Image 1 (cartoon, rainbow, N blue to C red):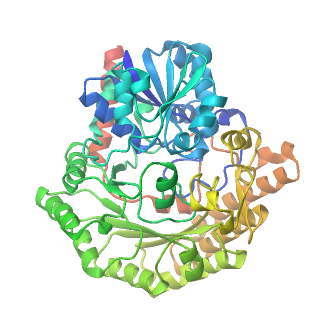
Image 2 (cartoon, helix red, strand yellow):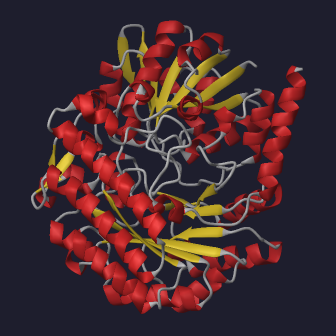
Image 3 (cartoon, rainbow, N blue to C red):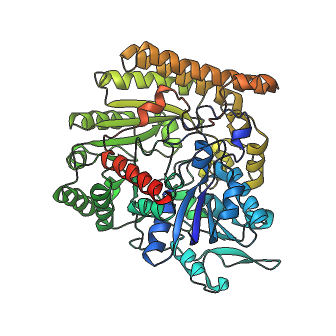
Length: 561
């Protein structure tokens, strides 16, 4: 079917199916695989906005198609594609290899199609992309690209479209970065568009957000653009937005729109919703409206709330009472308060411990607590002490099985635009800084240790890698000791970690012939993970979604017949 815009999501490494690449634990704590096949929520916002204005837009998850079939070839699909524009996301930097390769292949096989690239990393590296990646025609800067893209599609003169840098014959024209909307209520996250577009384009797989979405579906609702905090490693922080992405502070979507988006998901798809951004940081009147209105509307799907700091029990009580299944996640990053404060998390352990206890006492369904490895001022012993603190936190709460504690590396890249990336005084030593240096690392590297774009004054790259394996393994044994997992789960997860560690060590020695015996980057959606991967999943919804997907498949099958 003819489309005005096809939004394509690339894999992290374009040719991952032909290479023995060891992803290691870098995707253990996200729903997607190490190919990072989960496309950004901005795709849905763009599709919802443009479709409401009469444009024909589809999502094409190339990463997921590659994972799903070894026979899938992108160059064959691009030859058949009937579209005027392709939009490629380069939101997070780990997609740099996939995004650039997709752009090059599009131009090789279909030079008539205009290639647009957008996202935070594309914004940061806009000039370098236009100078060095001739296959990209336009880069759209900023965290809200719906309106500039709409203006491109409607045929507005490119010199009048804000935030873009583009090619005009042999010249590169830069319109500057001037458009940063302060009112975000024009944005909608209409998940029913995924189903409708799947039917219109005879393509269910290309619209799915990640491998297991039909089995464990989760929708996301974005509540804010920008952030009030400047965590040292985060490319979405206050510091990064102020200096690189055109916002001097967080901009909140209205409470009415948030309720509308959540209730649309509740009524149409009935799947769990991840509410992105700390709602409890909003004015009390706004958050009370959200909670009371959701109760009044009769919401009955699981909700997962992200919080940035511990909150008061009375605020948690309002949140937990919204629906029957409320979960929460918080990232203290380190159990060492000095390290935590240095990295931008302004609260102590007592506040964290009370917050966890309060949430469980109020009947919360699940709470996830995340620690990180590779922080400013963090040494190996600090990261291992995080595991000891995790044991303490679990025992303080009587080994309550609703509390899940995790540790993972800051990887594969320190975010461009973050304080750590920009300020040497924070102690990060960057191995790659430019766009193409990151691209070449993914092009030539074999393991996640090769991809790491930094080490610190306190830990070398080798120490970060080894400490990661040791800390995750130690945490697994703690969970077995306390009774969170059984012996079989422990052994399976331990073996996965040790096989991955072996592969990294073999690669470091140049023993590439033996690398195949290690844990290679997944070639399909069925790849096994450690127990940590299973523990991050939450919610009990999805019944209506499974029926709907089945109906779509049956419809497409009958239509072809």
